[in-house]
Length: 381
Image (cartoon, rainbow, N blue to C red; front, top):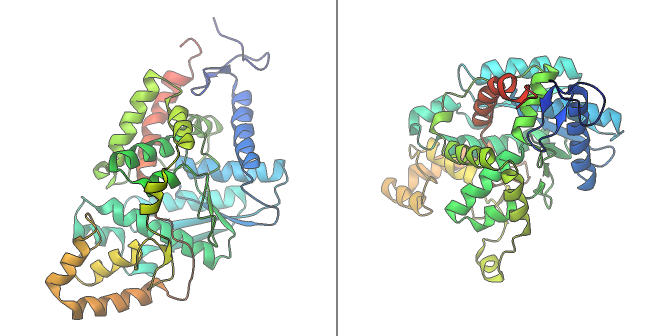
């Protein structure tokens, strides 16, 4: 016997993962949209008149974000000037296809699209980088370069803020990863709904309290156009192990994701640990905010250009060891070239937080879509 929707007389079509409520599609859509609006309004994420870049990869998170930002901007009169900002990492058979989805979304939502590539920004595509470094540390390069590329794109398009599709699952995974690494600075930052607030281009996370499963269900039942093919390099990402662990926790205890986030929000960093944190400073080469003389992006690019691809990867002193092996001349010349490529005239904030690779998120979406009809649609479960 079918069950009735918990919020209206209609027949229930799904069981909501976050609350276990039996809901019809319309009530589920409205519940999720209202929750995201509540997150936006209670955290004062936007101000009327702001120009907001919606980070768009073509995956389910960014597609639902673009859909909801457009919808809520009109419904609640946010007064925002929205545009899509997409980064082409240069991954054949993956990013080129997903960008086609982003271009279709540009037409669907009627908001302009700006695309920047690693090739034009850094002189390297991700495929070329992997050919140099292998698949062990490729996500380090991709994550650092992508964060900076989004910042540069935001500045070029005169954005006031960047909205990203990081969801509750992503944040819970990052909390666990930073705990395992003992990375106190990142642990203290990763739970913030606004990062880089002290800089010229803050990032906001409207989906901070939104479950990934519910984003997938929303996209599925709304029949949104999104890309779900896994990045060819995603299986080598360390984050995948944290993701599997979080999924296991959620299966045993659905509230585990929110419990992790709320627990981290209540932590207090001791004064002793705060005193040991590196002080923010401007990168001497590109002007981005950094925890050291040169930001991570500059160091990684220097390594690529000087034939030392592991420069800046792993232990903090590894870069200095590699510099010593090759001598100063070639590395210094490559450093100067790298500084020119990074554009020293652009002064903006570069976040150093750990972010979920868009490819890994797409992989999770591809797996979960298959579960929607089998697990979530049935009201008898």
